[in-house]
Structures are given as C-alpha cells and as structure tokens.
Length: 110
Image 1 (cartoon, rainbow, N blue to C red):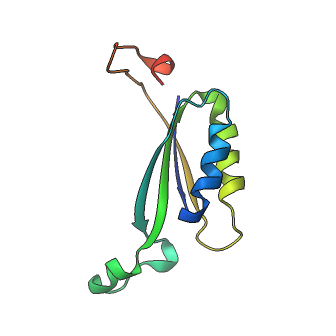
Image 2 (spheres, rainbow, N blue to C red):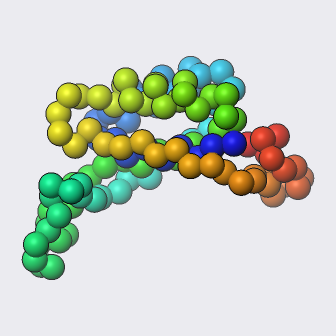
C-alpha cells in the first residue's frame, strides 16, 4: 500500500480530479486547500510569513502498490503548467489500513 501526497496549483484541481476519477481501482482521495512556500519563497521576516504563503491544493490518496505509477503519472501530467511552483508529489509506504465500520485491514480496507 502507498500513500501519495501531491501539492498542486488550485486551478489544476478540476483537471487532475477528473483524470483520477477515471482510474479503475482508485478508491478515493482527500483534497485540502493549503498555503505554503517553496525553497525560493521562504520569508525572511516573520511579519511577511503569512503574506508570502502561496495557495495550493493538497491531494492525499492511499492505494494499492499496482496503482501507484498510474496515479502519479496522472497527477504529474495534468497538474503540469511548465511554470515554477507547479508542485510536488510524495510517495510514502502505508503500513496498514483499518476500516472502522467492520475492522477490515490492509489493502481490502483501502
């Protein structure tokens, strides 16, 4: 199981979301509106910190190992603008999943 975390530009969410919904076997995703800055945009003064944070969308997906590359490719290709600050994708192993309603564990719970 994998945990995919992607930070993309907000105006790309609809396009990325539509493509992800077409992936057979994808069981869901969570979308959060966040603000942050990259290496080139780190604020120097504490007062400017909030002013310099850029809006992004965070997408989190837990998936079977076999879907990881399909999902990552879909996000990368559809979130790409060619401009600086397009975002990042992180892939982390997920140790376990538990469905609260019935106690199911592992990939079956995803």
